[in-house]
Length: 269
Image (spheres, rainbow, N blue to C red):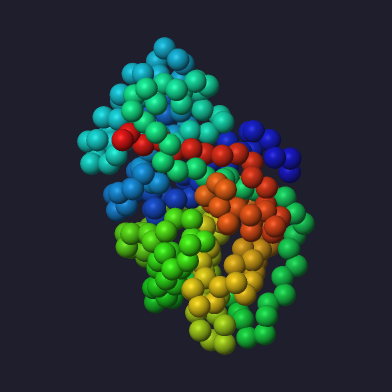
């Protein structure tokens, strides 16, 4: 499938749907924007206004509405801008209002052939089926995103991320398929990944490898295995997000992903 602007905009829509019941608690459409937020996680990665589509005259009032909404939720007012945001000069408008860039995501899309995965000896991948297995998944997530390596683009994540993941095991949106996987080497759980799909779109999330098992190719295996499974389920568009300019973006490019666009998170300082 050709990677058009319309496909990429639909992928962004699916991303917000996929994360409801996990990192996102709720979303609300207002005139000119979509508001998303988390009751568990306080940082601006999961509390912001996005899908902003307004005109230059109406933009300042919309910015005030957004700021007031998040302030009332005890969250820093934040906006997530993409190349599809309107008006085109919105960055200049919100910078005058005190917003500045806090984070940047590379939205990457798989454009390679169906992966042919050969698992190393002693390595198996198992889908999470029970709450105890989900607890194991979360334990590996916490180790993987604990800030053990300078290559980790997000540093040490707050404990609320793992708590949201565990709670999500029984709190998912209808008509969305969620596949959490654990990679085990010689019976030891040490890698994870999530694939979420609906209506031909699949998002890859939560890729993690315990620090002592890194730089041995397991991240590539977990990523491409989920990509293969997404294709086998009939998904034509497979996407993910990682920090723009990071080591991870370089790895995903090597594995067949292309950066389609950059999303910029602005926060009111």
